Length: 98
Image (tube, rainbow, N blue to C red):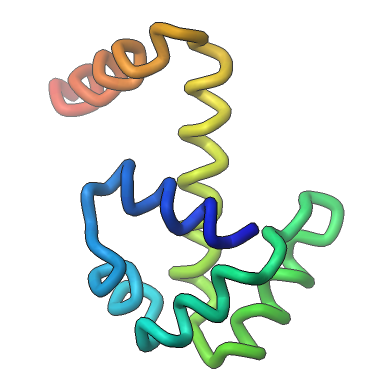
């Protein structure tokens, strides 16, 4: 569900529901309705993301950026196992140094 992706994004970014709604260009009510939708699946990601953006009158690019960020960080966490947080922090520090 998109609700999981939105909650995970807020957790990762340390932002509020209001901030996420502003990032997506929608109201809190619209964000809550979108949260009830299924997450786009890889085989039809573009089509499903476009349909959600159109249905709720939000910009497609910010929606896709939120969803992809969650996917990437969840994937990194799975690969790093229990130490995923430390690996992500090290990667972030390494990125800051360059």
